[in-house]
Structures are given as structure tokens and as C-alpha cells.
Image (cartoon, rainbow, N blue to C red; front, side, top):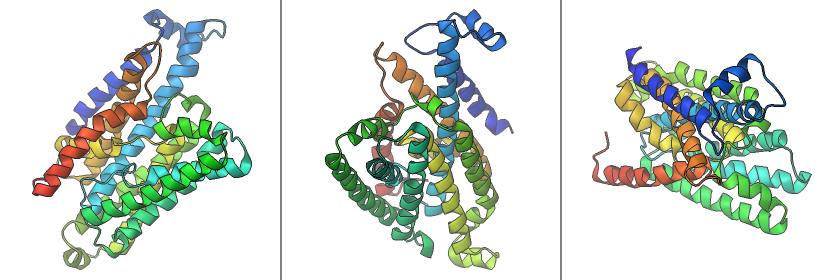
Length: 328
């Protein structure tokens, strides 16, 4: 339990930053008043309860989900470069979103969320199968190449949809960067349940996933069935990634950055890594969102852009360590 304390402290600071940060400074006394006696005529209460609190809840759900997804994906594939954004899963969500918009017209926020789910699920399954995951031999290079190819293909299809229907550009402009700005319009409770379901599947499968790391022959000798374990991992990644994309859109690199940090906090236990990843993922996304709100006031830099600015150098660093065989 003590391994969780640093991550809990970081999350507490991130929650505080998320509530305080913004173009408009709110007196601390207004926070207590808003919770005790919400006043629809008070602009400070409206800002807090209808804008900042939904963004906070959305960041908690999406960040925790991406942290779990990245940890499961990196562990099951033994690939430190695995990430839902890098491997084309976010592009799959954007594709079905825009395709649905082309067929249905301008969708509302709830429909946007539902349209994103099948694309994220299908893309994660395709990448895993193309990378050899269902055969138990998903190497770092093979999986990354499969994800890059699928990502390129899906983004080309997305561009074609935007060209066919110009009004879909407005939806795509929001979706391509990833943001918590519209979290209040999303079905956050449903997405939270989806993420929790994926997290529970990951926790239940964690001992079997750890057995796979010993090698296929030894894991089979311990009673592990690699195909079923990989399928459970795929379900966990699909549910958590779909929940995150449904709330915040494609948040790049978060699932890449969090797992290596979680391993240092949590040690070798995968279950502890998953718990720490959930806490750190939520904290990092909330911090990115808070920083994006104050870096160039009164404008806002979207959370997906902030995580990409942090994650791109980390990706390059990890890629160099993998090439030299120094990743551990």
C-alpha cells in the first residue's frame, strides 16, 4: 500500500491544479459555497460546477483508463513503445466517428462517444492480430510496424471523409487533438463503468500475464493458456481505450509515458503497476489540461497537444534505449 502513496500525492496535487487553473481565478471561499449551496445566478459557481468539475471527472476517467491500457499493452507484448495512440487505436476511433457523421449528419456529444467505441475496438484487435499477438509472438518491431501501417491507412480514410463532407471538418478539428473541454457533454458515468470493467479484467488477468513473461513453454507448464490470456488483455485494452477516447478523444503518448514511471514506483508486481498507472495516468492528464488552460491565456492549448509535447521526446528516448537493448 505504501507504494501507492507517492502516486496518490501526485494525483491530489493534479486535482487541486485542475480545480484552480483557468482563465478566471475563483476565490477559495466560492468552492465551499458552490458545494454547500449551489447558486445558478453565481458565475463562479457555474464555472466550477459546469466546467471545471466535469473536466476533472473526465480527466480522472480518461487518464486512468489510458494508464491501464498502456501498462497492459506494454507488458503483454514486451514492447516499451506500445501505446494506444501510436498503434492506431485513436485513429480507428476517429474513422468511425467521422464515418458515422457522414452517414448520420452532425452528431451530438453522446452519439460521438458511441461512434468512437467500435473504431477503437476494431483497431486494437487488428493491430494485435497483425502484430502476431494472437500467436504469442508479438515483438516490439512487428507490433510497432503493424500499428504504424494501420494508423497511416486509417488517417488516409479520415482525410477522404473530410474531403467528401466539409462540415465533418469541425468535428474532426476537435477530435484530432484530444481535449477535456467537452467532457461535461459526454456520458462520463458510462465511460467510467467501461474503464472500470477493463481495469478489473486487467487485474484479474495480471498473474497469467506475468506467467507469459516467463516464456510460452514454461507458462503452459504452469497451466496458463496464452491465447486466452492474450484475449483477456485485448478486452482490457479495448474497454479502457474506448472509454478514454469516448471522454477526451485521442490523447497521444499518455499510455507510453505512464507505464515506465509506474514500474519504478510499483516494482515487479503487475497488479500494483496497474493501480499506480491508473493514478499517475489521471494525474498526468489533469496536469496537462490545467497547464494548457494557463500557458497562453485567455486561449487554451488542448490536453492532447500538451501530452504530445511531453510524450514525443520520451518516445524518442525509449526508442533509442530499445535499439541499444538498454530497456529494462
